[in-house]
Image (tube, rainbow, N blue to C red):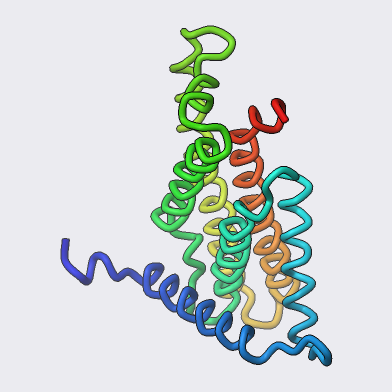
Length: 213
């Protein structure tokens, strides 16, 4: 595979967003103050508090283990969705390859956290509940929900971008202001839905430990 085929517009935009997040996190760590927080610090702290509360309410037993992954997914997807509002740029999440990669992260995170919480034997045992012949159905369910995660985010963001693009061509730059606001709301909503579904799937993988405790 040539470098040109790998470095698509979505990939380059995604890499830029990752770099921005790394730089932003470094700036936040060095510049945030405990005694006199600024407006930006308050916004970031409120966002992190919301993420932490959501994770804790869903996984009360060990929220700190899952918090970094879910928080990163939420913030990264939100920025990817919002990039589409910038003229000349497209949301990486309007690319099926990007959403598929995100869905695969969740797919592998579920058994990772499940095995970490329960142990490999206890986790694998759940694939044969209530009877051993249910194993293929559990596997199909895992694959299906992974595909659903990828296609849902891709479908919503790509259709939104196409719709706004058509309106810009037909009506000019002044008329679709309301639709740009709709894009903004949709970007936040889709990031939240993806993160919550990922959180619920991971919680289901850790469910047996919670029931035993």
